[in-house]
Picture: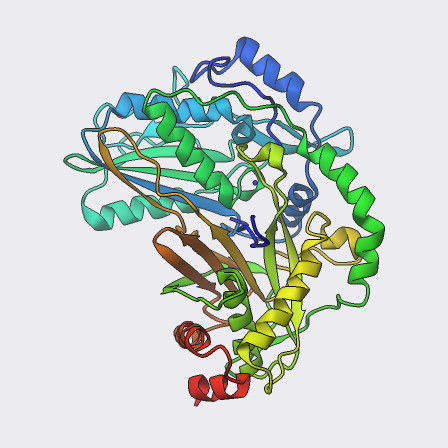
Length: 472
């Protein structure tokens, strides 16, 4: 996150600082594994990893923590070079091999099973990379003999869906996987899926950037070793007294959120649906994230909520971890009481001030400041993740490449979650929802889009006038 804009949920500490020149792509044992084992034994989990791991043990979350990414490649692909680049990325970012385990009654990051880097059945020369014998027959990460290849758009969609939905072995790993599909002459699709325990939204940018670099024959600079779990505990311990004082008068159980006449209470994870919208919100003096969040709060107030509470995902990534893949995020609540007489600009400016107060304690998990909070997949029924991408998609030499950054994982945490990516092509909002709790999601998406348009064109209108125009 930069400039006070929250980063998406959708980064932890790397086990070692070794670069690709120190561990060869596909190295699976011997000295490399020993070095990783020794290095990882020192590393504590972060508070977010701890909370996520506990939630996975306590409640059913399905695929809510699965983070997929699709890279479309058109042209004369050097398949061997791409699969070797995938293996090199794994060697550069040992966090991808990590699992959370109980060691001496404490949660630690330890190396898990090797990550499969493979071609799908039906692709020329289809075989796993990184292990001489490949994954065991019938294993969760292996394709059984006789598995069909992908044919046509329907076949591709079904294969991608299967990859996204396939369960992770949280105890043994791996918690990430690469699969390459040939979808037509000169057309390939690389599917990457990771568990949120080891991956966040900014990690997507890092992974694709490093993948392109290795494919292009470049060698990224070695990464410094960090122990984010330990350094995070030091920072949180220093900030905890002030954080407790800050949250004591602000936090209370959110109860229900009214949405189009329905009371939303869900803080669980379950099967979801998705709608997408694009927007270009712009109000001078406010970031696009601040305009979006203010519009969401105004809309919820128009649906009958005098007090509005949503959760936002905030980046906790320190400067030294800028190029590390991992989980660096903290979910915190933001509350408001929109006044019908206030203009949109006045309300959004006040919400911006409250956000600035919350940002002061972004490093401190709410469960540390308010320890009686029970584990839930979602902090409140409605939440937002927002990530800004400043650069165009990385270039793969000789190929026409494009990336799908907000691939749906077929699940939702809570009743309604807005996953937003603000990139060179504009702001894309993936509105993920529980179809039972929010059956009128298309109406919600339309209302939000219209409200953003009204706020952009007439930010000095009172909220009651804007809502009358939208909800009449």
